[in-house]
Amino acid sequence: MGEVLTSRVTLRQLEAFAAVADAGSFTAGAARLGRSQPTVSKEVQALERTLRRQLVDRSPRRTGLTAAGRQLLAQVRRVLAEAAELERVAAAPTARQAVRVRLACTPSVSNRLLPVLLQRVEGGLPGHEIVVKEVETGEVEDLVEQGRVDLGLCHYPRHTPATRIDVLGDDELVLVGQRPVLAAITDPGDLRALSATPLLLWPRENHPEYFDSLVSVCRARGLSPLILIGADRLSGARSYLLTQGRAVSIVPRDAAPALDSALASLPLGPDARAPLGAILPTAPRRAALAIVELVRQLRAQPS
Image (tube, rainbow, N blue to C red; front, side, top):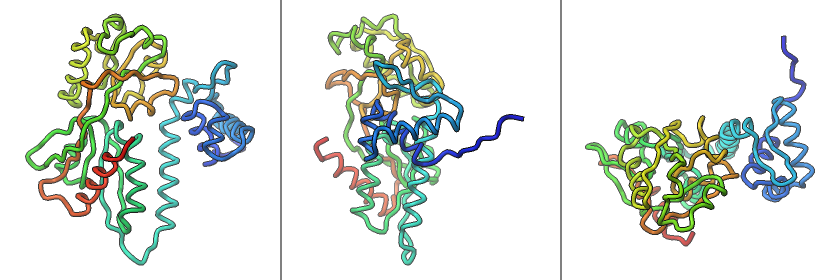
C-alpha cells in the first residue's frame, strides 16, 4: 500500500501555481495575487509535496513549468474556475430566477474574450447568467444546431441549415514556437526558414476550412509546411513539441497565452486574420442576442 498523504491540496496553492505559470516568475505571480513572494513560493512547494511532483523548474536563468506542471495546468485552471463559479452561485440572490444563456466557445476564444465578457455580463446585464461550455475547434456549430447551447463563439464559424452567423470581426494570427526557432524568421512575409520545422495543428477533420486557411497562410509566405497532427487541443498531448522547439503552430493572438509561457509569438501580418463570429439558432433567444451585442461593444473598444 502506498504512503497516505498527510496534507490536502488547497485553492490558495492552486492559485499560486497558476499565477506563477501565467506570470513566468514567483515574484510576478505574487504581485498578481497580492501576496508576498515567500508566501507564494511556500504554497507552490506545499502543492508539490502533496502531489509528489516537481511542477516548477527553478533554474537560475528562468522560472518555467516542468512537464508535470504543464500537464496539470489545464486541470488546475478548471478547478479554479469551478471554485469561482461555486462562490458566484452561492453569493447570487435567490429571490429572482436568473436568465440563463448557454454559451459554447473554442479555446481561441476562452482565453481572453470570454473572461472579459463574463465580467461585463455581471455588471451590464443584471439577472443574466452565462453557462459556459468549452469545446474543441469545430464542435460549436453542432451544439447550437442541436439546441444544446443558445449561442456559440468561435473563429471561422460555419453556417448550417438551423443556424445563422453574426460576424464579429477578425483576429490577428500569430506564429508560436520557441524563441530560437522564431528568431530564424527575419520577415513575417517569408517563412521559408521553417521548411524543416513541422507545423503542429489539430486534426483537419475537426474544421477543414480553418485548417486549410492556416496552411494557406504558410504557403502565401513561401512555406509548404510539414504538417504534424496533434491532439484536438494544441495544449494537449503533443504540446511538448512546441516547448522543445521541434514544431511551431499558428493560432489567433488571444489563444497564444494559453499555451506554454516559455513560447514566443510572431504576428504574421495584416493579411493573416481569423474571422470571429457568433453562431445562433435561426430564431435566437433575446438574451442570447443581448450577449452578442455585448461582445460587439467589447470588440469595438481599443485593446
